[in-house]
Length: 230
Image (cartoon, rainbow, N blue to C red):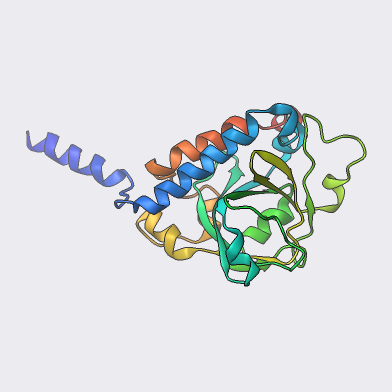
């Protein structure tokens, strides 16, 4: 009996302990998951397959509010996960703020999607703060089943960006928008401090409340056969 108690104690210690996650963070993860499902439910009007296969990181900012960014205040709270050799990483939380006066998406409840398409885009997301279009070369992402031969996203951009409002999904110019790590909310999700580097590299287990979002990303952003066979 004593041996059984010892074994159960050791097993319990081996399982990562996650504190109770605030409902607002669970809601944010759920909203990001729902955003991806809505976008990908119409293949001919969604992210092209070639980008889904090559993506290194995916960020979703659900429910952006128009009034906030007009005054240059914080206007977006999002979540990011990155591809690792073991699958998609646990998510981290980000804030998006600033933007230029030309960034007029408009409409209440606009969703944003950011996709890093190479290693440079991944490295940008590991910075505590960066500005899209400055350190990170960005472009409005193409829409449709195929990116098309005329697009040069793979050669010239680290980040591709889209917006979704009133059911319309289209590429959007996010140059001038600042992306900042939300370390406080990320720590609440994991119940302990971890660097963005360690989480996005897949070194930290995915918290239970974040698994539905990560599974949804894995469902759509599958690995290309050419990369998988290398």
